[in-house]
Length: 497
Image (cartoon, one colour):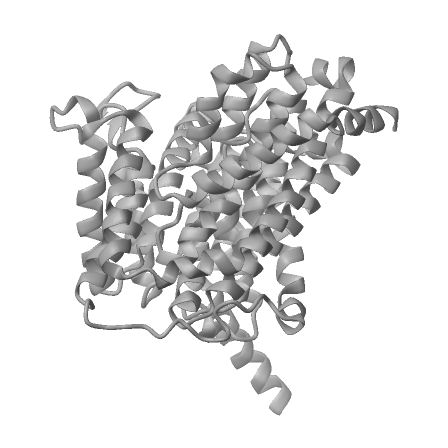
């Protein structure tokens, strides 16, 4: 208990609190801008952190990490352009709510769900960090492969007009993810002699193009259409009835996000997709999803922020980054002379609790910013389209270029925008393609490593009970409607007799 108290006292210094607040402001701002992400902002802070003491430096980065994840939901809800990849699922129901004049309600629910998910993951860390880290450590490539296949199977019900179209889009995303040099064999695939493709296609410009540019082209066909958004409900925050409706969704997604965050390399995006899918699966109003369901915001937002706390567990306790942002934080720890891993737990436990205290403060800070600013943020939807969408286009160009300082990424973004526009016209959801691209690299690498481990013997996958569990969940996810129909048919007849 003493290390916990020491960690809290370290973060109560006014200068440290000021830095945390600065990290929150930067995180929300960067997260809200399409194409600019928290990993980019944390990387830019890396040289600056050298001039600070380790505790405030890492605390500021952790605060930016938490706030940036929430900030992505702002533009996802208001203009269907997720500021960060984890907010892609939030856009599915957040944007329809904004279109019908409920932007303030959607933003308020996103802020509160994010904070509850983040606080839940931090409480779990304080109570059960050693056991959770040990569980994540048991995951080998076969377990990662099974988990990723399960995540891909859930794309069937995420968006679009049919499950088949969603699975096709996801498969195309996985195929795009295979471009570049295969890490295991060194073979070049789908590079077509282009140097920029040797390292593969990054998902950030693809995400910006599919959502931002795709929506821009779609809106260009509706220039004469004017949405009535100045109504009393525009600035209305979530009601008590809303919280009653989503309480179990938030709790469930917090569990999912914390668990996925603890698994190295999975991150908040996978957690958000799983949180959204499970919110839809357990909802009594499935038909509302995709058309402005409040549960469709609470589910992914609670999950992706819970994943931020979870991702810090293997980063600090094991020295294994749980996400892209925590990989940069890990580098900052090494720059400051720390040895992330078990030694950090044993030698300076108060430092770990100081970082998580900073994240706890950050959650409550962006809760205040989110609630107080929900009315202000909702006013963004009142900006004329002739001004709004050119600005989105400019930010998309800047964000795509600044990700890797590459003109090639701008071309990828523009081509992805055309693809996204065509997909929307023909009933294909853009989100499954993005998720397929993100998960494709992980599923391929884990499969290659597993086959090397098993000497190309496929049957050895079934030696692991965790793999069997994820495979069973995958089958249930894909064929649940058929199983439910057979169940009702068999037991319905049995009861009638």
